[in-house]
Structure formats: C-alpha cells, structure tokens
Image (cartoon, rainbow, N blue to C red):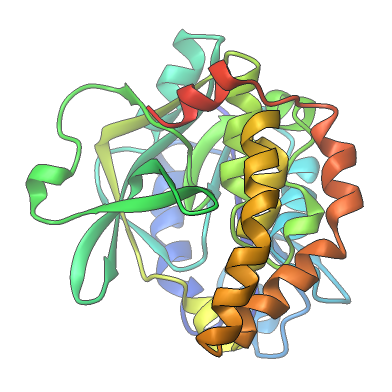
Length: 305
C-alpha cells in the first residue's frame, strides 16, 4: 500500500508535534509519504518540523493563502492517488487508517471516507463528521449531532451529506477532476461541503467509517489567528446558497435578503451585513462555477437526507 498524508499548517508549532509522532508509528507499519504545506507561518513551525521530523516533505508558502489553496497544493504534489487529509490539530483515537482507504478500493464510485471525528461545542461532545443539513431561514444550514454517544454512528459504513476536511481519505484523481477546493472560500469554511456536493452531483459516494475515530481540538488555528471567523463563516454561507440552491429556491432566497438586512440593522448586527457585502464581491466567481455543477431539486433533496 502507498498513500500520501497531506497536512495544511499555519502557526502550528505547538499543536502539530503529537500528530506527526502518531504518523511516524503509522509509517513504520504502512509506508507512505507525508506532506506538510506551511501557509507562511510566523512561528517556529518550519524549523520545528525540519529538526524533529525530517521524514516530512515541506512545501512553503511565502504568502498566507488559506486552507483551500494550502490543501490543493499539498494534494497536487502528492505522489500517490490515495490521500489522507488531516488538520494539524487532530489525533487518532481508535482504529486503523487503512480502514479509511478500504472502501475507496472496493467501490470505484466512492469519493471520500471520513472517520468519526469527536469535537466539542459549548462544553458538549459532538460528532463533527456526522451532521445533517436542514432547511431554515434563507436557505440550508448545517447542524452537528451532539452527545450522548447514541448520536455517534456505531454500525456499518454509511452515507452522509458531506465529508469534513478535518480528517478524510479520498482519491486524488477524483479530487482533481472536481476542481479541488474552491479558492473563493479562503481562508476557510464550507469548502469541504461544496466539494462533497460536487461529488454527489456526479453520483459519487460520501461515507463515514465508524470503526475509525479521531479527536479534533476544534478550530485551533481559526480561533487563534482569525478574530473575524464568524464573519468569514457567514460570508461563505451566502456563497453556498448561491452555488447550490435550485433556481426557484434561489429566487425565494433573493426575495428574503431585504427582510434579513433590515432585521440585521434593527438588531445592530452590522457584522452580518459586512459578511453579505463581502460575499457579493465574489458573486461573479460563484455564478461562473455554478454553471459547471448545476443544482437541481432532486440533487438538493439528496443533500438534505
């Protein structure tokens, strides 16, 4: 077996070490390559990895480009088709990484397999890789399934609405065929949802593997270095609606916008208005991309399952 592990990194010198120590033990059992793309870190990340983990192939950005380009660059540089993409703040808790690749080999229609990813929100454990898409005000929204453990998948390999990029295994060839992560989501949020929707539009499968479990120390980089991360999140929510709402739902969405803007003003949530205005600056790129993956009502209903 040959595979490539790709890790985007930005100022992760204090968090990436334990993951690379784990990976060193994996490589002893299942040889592969490890690529870390450093996104113009200002800490000691690069020196730390060069000294402590010489087996890592480093790709260095001179300018901070965000998650999408950083991941795309690492995946493009990979020598093998089987890719394991990992956040620098993840750790394997249970299972074998081989179990993430197995479904890709057995079924050529499988695009991505994600493990159970344990995170935390408001003091409660959540399964970040087991989410549901729901219709709500203005369009569709993502909701985490939280603890107790009954909410965590325990049975067989099963389909999910999207594969989170926190930890996932997929085919490089299919990833490139889909165009990778879109740069207009930079620095991050929703690029993995969009990628999964593109895969589903081609009838490829997005699956969760319950036998493998990772811990995610949630949003470590974003929380520390992007003080406006909620603005970025909401900006990218707008982009997703414009990409994937079917035509009649999109028309309804645009009719809703003036009401929503007035509501934001009355509640003095001016940061939400800024998010919308920033999304508008990218709308021409979004509608250009929309023509390549045309959303239909049938496809949209698949997302909501």
